[in-house]
Length: 520
Image 1 (tube, rainbow, N blue to C red):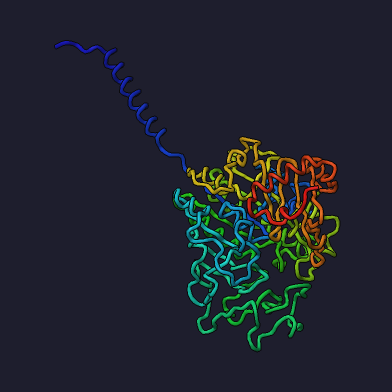
Image 2: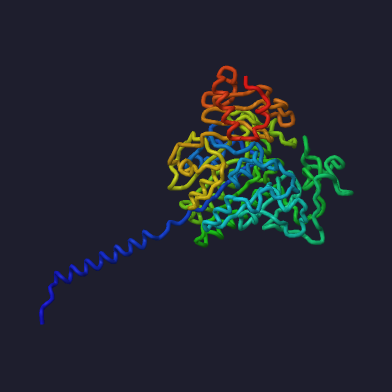
């Protein structure tokens, strides 16, 4: 019998090993990379200077700063509007809110603003295998306009792309003052049904005007209807006693729901999208006793510290669940800051040296920069290198950008895919952006801002905020003049005309007031 060659045997063994290894490598290479989770932390009325990482105000927000300093801090990040409902509409639809005449501050009884057949960010992400949830403030309407709060409310957030929703219908200062989970009021006693009306009170029900002795918080303007937990609200409500929320426990409540959601999703392999829409520092400012007096600035400062703590706890939950390295966190606010927004709560009196708007002019409701330029941060541990970006980005762009991140090519006409910018791979932002405030619009393009002539008060007295209204055109170079102190409309007519034409091109037939004013 012929003796086998040991070298041939060894060579065959090595070849077999290499073939097997190559095969395993090929299989591994074909395995798809796990899609990242997405958590969007959305605050309410938080100003550019309210986050200490922006180095403008005096309040300290270490947990917000951890995201800002460990991620990408945008200095030119915008909400779409200077008020809440339009900004939330733009965020979820990728559409300018001024294209929808109903996209304005809504009462608690308004019908669902987003069409159930409309493209939305959560719908896109669901199509890419994501589980989607919204926890916190909604304020985009519910039902069809005639709501029975004692039955399933339809349509609701679950009909526009969310698999799970645990929300307040509108705002903390508006009725109904109850939590709604997946279309049903939580803890509702069927023997004590809820009735809600924004036009007239229910017979025999106390209001802030008829029964001021029941108030624990005094109203300044606009908040003098039904009294819930000693706080006067907007709108009238009767019944639902067992379902009413505790205002001072609201932050803990929404945090607990968000933590439970994250912990549950961490058990599986499905990526998730969580819109965590916090209520702070919107009125009524009702910090938990743990935070009362901590800021020295009254309830507004205290609820900002409370919000910062909540963000820290949410971050800790992601960390404990081992999710930080595969979770993109986006942090922003729906519009700029306001101090007195309907209640006497010492927000003005105890402000001290703090500057909620930072170096910017205006605030909530305003066409000036502080109305829409807000804190805007992206954080992804190990993926986003810490830094600062001056690129112009907007919340409208998140639809196309996050769709791209999830593997979809779906988009909306007004939304730009700036995912590389959000990840710090590019410094290119959008070229132009038409912002909105109280149905009035202005143009940001490059370093420039143009505000058309608009009638109305220069300062809204109730909130003491400059509105941006003027009988003349306003033109500002924001790079040189972020505080918008120097109107260059007369000294730079060529740039003004260029901006006006660009504004008209974007707005089209809806350019409104600007068409009626001669360019001078």
